Amino acid sequence: MTKIYNFSAGPAVLPRAVLERAQSEMIDWHGSGMSVMEMSHRGKEFTGILNKTETDLRTLLNIPQNYKVLFLQGGAIAENAAIPMNLLGSGEADYVVTGAWSKRSVEDASAYGKINVVASSAAENFTHVPAFDCWNLNPNAAYLHICTNETINGVEFDGLPDAGNVPIVADMSSHILSRPIDVNQYGVIYGGAQKNIGPAGLCIVIVREDLLDRALPITPAVFNWKTQSENQSMINTPPTYSIYIAGLVFEWLLSLGGVEAIEKINIKKAGLLYDYIDSTDFYFNKVAVKNRSRMNIPFFLKDESLNDAFLKGAEAQGLLQLKGHRMVGGMRASIYNAMPIEGVEALIHYMQQFEKAH
Ligand code: PMP
Image (cartoon, rainbow, N blue to C red; front, side, top):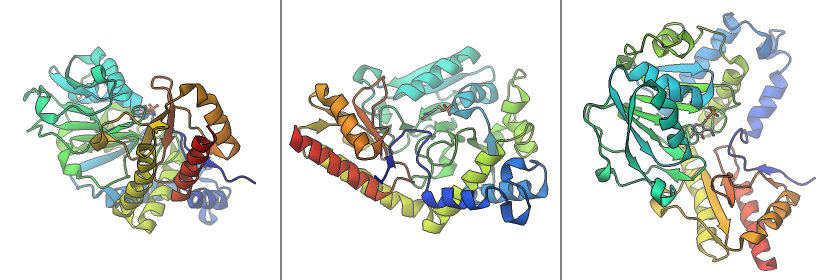
């Protein structure tokens, strides 16, 4: 049977070891006689799973005690609305637009108050992060919103601006846990799970405690970070099975040596693919080198009329989901934590073959 490598941008590949463990525990979790799916979210079994999941995430990202970790629903897009509802008050917020997802964040937040786009790379088709010293930051902004890895455009931040006392709110959906971060530099970190964390249906929000008392009165309880943090993310029924799988992914990452260890592998994987793309005129990537994403690698064939043949041939070799996002075109290889280096090598091997044949 052909070995399958799934390059989907999300929902995306999960570690094989995690899926096998979930399979073995599917019907009878730890002798409880129940599947995790069947358990009360308030029972001792699931409460134990939730606590361990949070503890492991705190260990992986070295999350300080003055930050709350929330396990919510509605995906990152729900947070696009929750962020202004929880933080904007009667003030204004700064947003930086570096790709399709931060653009969407501006659109969603604008319903709740005054949103200022203080820097944008739209005019350059989202191929870089604008230089920090060109950002027109407002020192009185309620917060500064950025998307530190643009999944569709393949643009990743290579540092953070100095925002003074303005809390930075970062959408890390597509690169959370791929590299170490200093949580203290952020007011809020959020991300949908379906890339580096687990199944869709779960969104993680890490929020500094002092930001929890600013919610607008219209904020629904499910999206009110303070209410959720006071109720262990259980103001409603949380996405229990997704949380359980996230917990298994966190255990897997810890067993590999944590984010420091996976970062080394991620640098290697992305390096292999970019180096190959740069070594030939047959393929190209448009993103400024210092902002090239380690997770999402868009690339183009010089002769776009070969796109369909490229995708068909890739699929025949078990290399799936390589079609680029419709907004960008071309190809995109998403190589999250769970993509083994062999998958990247197989892709490069196929790209070389295809180049030779055409
Ligand atoms: N932000 C980023 C960076 C994303 O990649 C995505 C989904 N691909 C979203 C936001 C939206 O996430 P969701 O569909 O889970 O709401």
